[in-house]
View 1 (cartoon, rainbow, N blue to C red):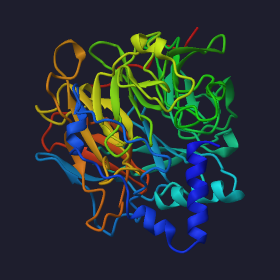
View 2: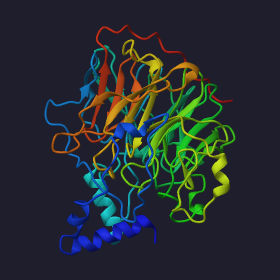
View 3: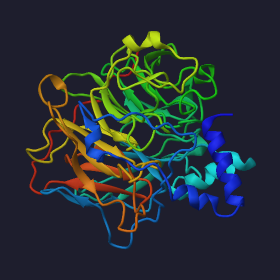
View 4: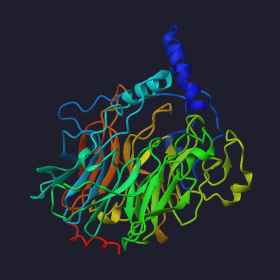
Length: 461
């Protein structure tokens, strides 16, 4: 029986008992470091406080009161770009400025047995318990006023969407990452609806960490897909994690996938640094090591790199819970470039070069931190900026800079949770909020408009 299943069974037993559930939740592992101390190139690391039953502190999802919104950093403003969406998770801007939003959630989970029932309860409290809309909506701000006045269902379940997430346009082909397959559609920029059924490119391991981010190489000949692990630390055996905890490189012509980089527990947001043309990702690390460990991270990813999961973390610290161990892999474990704090759940990633937010945000990465479920006090629940320096790497000594905060109210309830981030056609930052069901637009008043976008990558031949 896995540790997580033991935990869920425990919850089910004590919930039926006499208040044991409250007893446990009221005595969690409390962080001993400030959240910001576990960030940067040299984060403060504690000894692991391994747990059979994890700390659980969920910010119950309540949504935004009428007229409320998050708080933007000094010199920036925030307003809704689109509202009334259904669990918006991921964003993708087309060359003409149209914005695609994946309205999506995890694939259906069984509702039988104590384990599944408790898992559904936990997801529901966090705002992730709603059925997946299985929809990609096109939003258009034709008049440039910062509000999308055109909304159209581009793709739906009838087109073959199953918990869709990442999107990438290559020539006149739109790629979409379902939880269990990479699929594609013929599409011309300017169209507002696709009627064809999706063509499968490759199968992907379904379920588990279900989000499948998608980015295309500059020439369009490789599609990169992020696939998270099935379990926390290969609890069901490493054989069940085949082609997981990895970034896959897919050849769209031959329909073959190979592992580009591995040992990444849950790589979600991916993006190419416009200056160096190198691939970067943000990664959700493992759980049940206490509120301070280990740090989630941002890192540049090279072909063949191994980042340690499940045996090691943060460049070679051994996770002694994993059996059998692989001490021989420690010397081959790459250290991530930048820590983002423990349990912050980084999901969204985009680079500053596509944005016009003023002189303080010229070179670096914007990251959506979805927020913790197992840290006391809570961490994440905001959008941050990581400044870069020379050589296309985070600046020495840099710490994350808060860009958008205020997603959790004074009662500890989540009014919103940020996910995907991207630039709109004017250079403002768009942020998908899957609890608030809104896309926020962060702008710098008076900023000069961004130059006209370049053409998308040529179709793969």
